[in-house]
Length: 471
Image 1 (cartoon, rainbow, N blue to C red):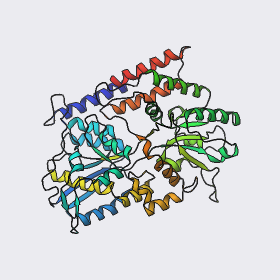
Image 2: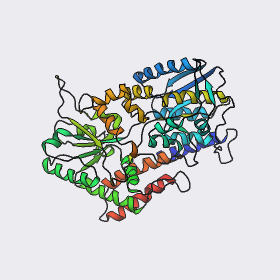
Image 3: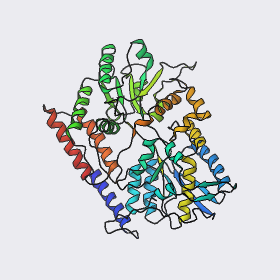
Image 4: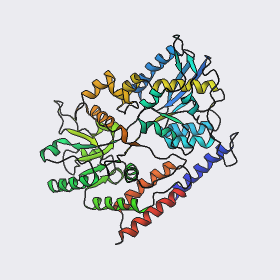
C-alpha cells in the first residue's frame, strides 16, 4: 500500500509540475505539434548540442570517433554527451529538467519515456524533418537533403523504425538507435546427444520440455527471463488485445489471454519452466549450471548472449556448445518477436536551429552503415539498418558466429534473419505500468493457489491487474 501511495504522489507531482509550464492545456498535457522546419534548414550558425545516454567507455569511444567525423561536415555544430547512469536515470533526470526548460537536445529513450516527456509536449515531432527536401550545404562543399531519402527510409528495419510512431497521434517522435530482441538459447551439445529438435512452435516447445524432463528429471527445461515480454509477445502472436495508445488503454483481460496463461500455469506445475522473478535471478544461471538443477533452454535478450555462455576452462574450452534460434511462434504466418533497446528523441528548443542541428546529428548516426556496423559489433545490439549485413566489417564479424567465443555474432545472425517479425507495443503515459502488471500477473497465475478453481483464480488475477493499471 505504501508503494502505491508513493507512486501516486510522484505521478501527481509530475503532472502538477508539467501543468505549470507555459502553453500547456488546462489538462496539464501540452498540445503536440509538428516541428516547423526553418526555410533555410540549417543556417550554418554555431549551435551547442547535448546528448544524454547510458553508454559505457567502449561505446562512448565509438561515439566520439563519429562525432569527429560529423564535425568535419558541420564544424559549427558542437556535440557533447553526458553518461547518465541507466535508462531510468536518464528518464528521471530529464523529467526534472523539463520543468525548468533545461532538458538536453537529444536523449536515449524508450517509448514510455517519450510519452512521459510529452505530458509537457517536450519532444519534437520529426515528421517534417524526415520529409524535408531542403538542401543543406556541408563544410566539405558537398550537400545533403535535410530529410531522409526514400532509400534511407527503406533501409531501416521496419519494426524498429515504426516504434517512433506508436504514440496514438500518428506523429513520429524517435528514430531507432541500437536494438535487441529475444532469442532462444539452447544447450546444443545436450540437444545433439539426445536427438532433440529445436522447437519452432510453443506446442513443439512443450513436447521438448516433456522429453527433457524424462532425460533429466531434476531439470527445469526452460528459463524465460522476462515475464512481461512473454505475455506481450503471446498477445502479438495470437492477435489478441493488450493495450491501446488511445481510448481505453488496458485491454489485456480477455479470454484468449487467460487461456494461454492457464496453459503456461500447467507447464509450471509440471516443472517445465521458470522465470526470472520466480527463480530470483536471471535464468542464465540455471542454463550455465554445471551441476544440480539445470535448464537446457533459455529465452532472453539477444544482447546478453555472452551471459548465456558457460565459463571457459583454462584451455579456453566450454562445458557445452550454445545454440541460438528464434523464439517459438504460435503461427508461422504471423511471426512476432519483441523490439527492445533504445531509440533517440530530439527535444523542442526555443532556438529552432538547435532542433535542426540535433536532427542532422541523429540522422548522421542512424543512417550511417559504418557507424551502425561498428557500434553493433562493439555493443552486441542489432543494427537498425538492413544494409549493415553487407558491410565488410559487420559481415566479417557475423561470419565468425559460433556458440563459444563468438556467441555475440551468432546472436546477431539470428536477429538479422528475423527482421520482418519485430513488433512494438503502443506507447502512452502508463504503458510501463501495463508491462509491470502483466509481468506480475503471469508470475501470480503460474505460482498462486487457485483454491480448486483455476478459471476463477486466473480471471480474478486479470481483473486485479487491470485495476492496478487504472489505479
